[in-house]
Length: 150
Image 1 (cartoon, rainbow, N blue to C red):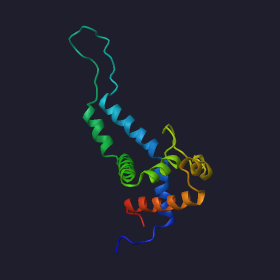
Image 2: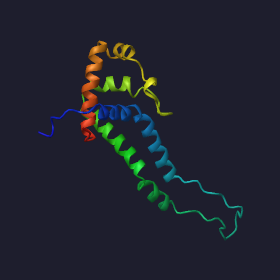
Image 3: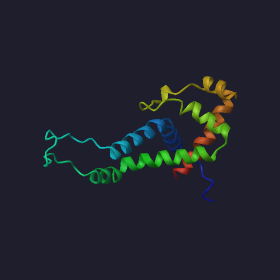
Image 4: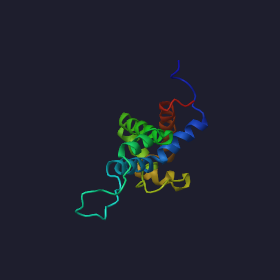
């Protein structure tokens, strides 16, 4: 019974936003993980000396701070849910999602106006515009349900 519920327009918009920002969020997570693995360290002027004069904050403290940040954890959840979603859907559906929402390199947050239009997407996936929009609606509903949105 819980499986069959109507997804609200707000939930669909949220799912579309998560898809739109997927590449950007994935890149941000990679940058943060990279900075935790290889933190910036100041060099000591005392080359060859026996005492170190610089105080370097422990890397573990920074990792703890990042991994308890709710916003960062939400971003990690978004990326993992979308990645799992893309693994579970058909190749044709993945092609539609990639051409519509994931066609950027993730260098910045995308606004809805920056997405490719349906004419371009329909030519790339070899479907009509209406078929693309209908499949998009079904996919967005399915993704919203994965986020337990109603």
